[in-house]
Image 1 (spheres, one colour):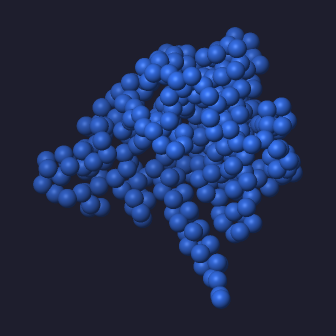
Image 2 (cartoon, rainbow, N blue to C red; image 1 turned 90 degrees about the vertical axis):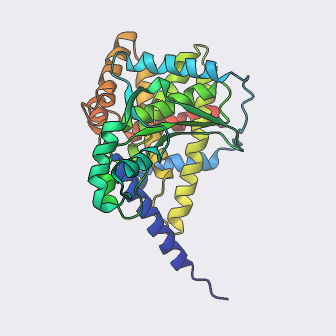
Image 3 (tube, rainbow, N blue to C red; image 1 turned 45 degrees about the vertical axis):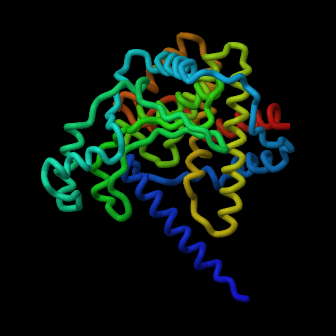
Length: 330
């Protein structure tokens, strides 16, 4: 029997590349790479994960919380970090309503020829809404997850149109987030919505999860001074990093290019380094750190320039994560 696995790899890589290009166009990224995955330090991180005998924890047996409490705690943590900056985001109720309204008002079907008019239409009709008041869809499934949902109308090869589209929120989805971890996950998703309003503020696609993971850890730290919540949130995040790193390693061996998982790895490396700077800082230094990060949230400075300003590196984050593997994932 003959297996044409090379053809399958080629098709998969074409799909991944297309997805990456679409994502970069929607959010305004201009880069999708890192040299760190080729370093000795990253190899040491991989080896530490392989040696760890820790088994995946699916349920931390945290007490259930009402959606009201989860939201109140998340809003408290987010507002504390963003202080007095504008937190309003562009919002529409549903993905297709504005499309239908546009077609009904102008008597045309939306296509490439009237895309510029449609973009003007949605900019005019999208509402500004406090990120802490975005509607949340609470659902149950067979795994935990969360997502900041955005309006997506054009896809496929409409790259030039997608580049011009503003990023507009349609709400947040929370899957199986009915305990204390739900608050940090909700902060994670609200952070995405804040960053998304400034298209291109994150230049490298691999950094798209960075601020959300950082804010998730900060929320866990600030909402429970005993440290238990932070320890659980750290284990939960590092478990996901391990999964993504093991997949990246295997996929590279089999000839696949970097998929969506790579951004969770690279973003986590930076996020853990940034969080350690926050955790170990004095109150005065934390206030200064928030001020620097809020320049990116406000759209005044790219994330990459903020990382350079704060001297945050992937290598530092790798050292920190390797320390957590030794203490929390024995």
